[in-house]
Image (tube, rainbow, N blue to C red):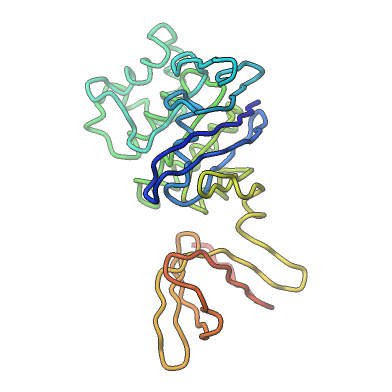
Length: 289
């Protein structure tokens, strides 16, 4: 459905960085782009949307070329079949909920707009202005507006990152339901491993402007082995010494845990690093909250 090969030189916090990305995405897939800040995730979405021009490469969607550097094809954003949900909602403050959604398709298709209002739980808020809405309600409006055009490709740039955990979970459920309902092809940038597991069927892991790994969320974040080992990726938050051992604070998904480690295990490890935790012959108890 979507095939792209894109390159672009950008300025990053670490200096000039060369982005060089290629991938193919099937129709109806929900793909997450996962990686550290400054790796090129948002730049990728902006190039696909036509908001940033690549230095080279091509973008082909459903057999239609949106961009080709050699052939000098560059379809403008408004003519690309995309929906884009930004982190900051990007709603028109002077337009009501229904008018924000209608802006994407015009006012002639009221039946479709009313259906979207019902599907996203916004029917009772149709005449409200964005300034009177909560963060979760604003994000629902942004999502409904993005879907309103029935886009070939839905781009999500960390759309739920500013919301609290409970609201994020509810909107993740909404996203999953809407994806099943419309069969959209979705490319989502996210830092939330739990969110990636819940929504995506495939992950493209990006680092320093390149895809370094690709696979299912389980393949990338969990490595289960027959001999009873569990390998989990985690981020080191802090290391403190207590007599002959060290206590390491780790971020696993959205949870902070502390583990004991010895000097030789921490050689070269510092706060901010991504590490693997290997649990051997573990016995897990799962409790519903």
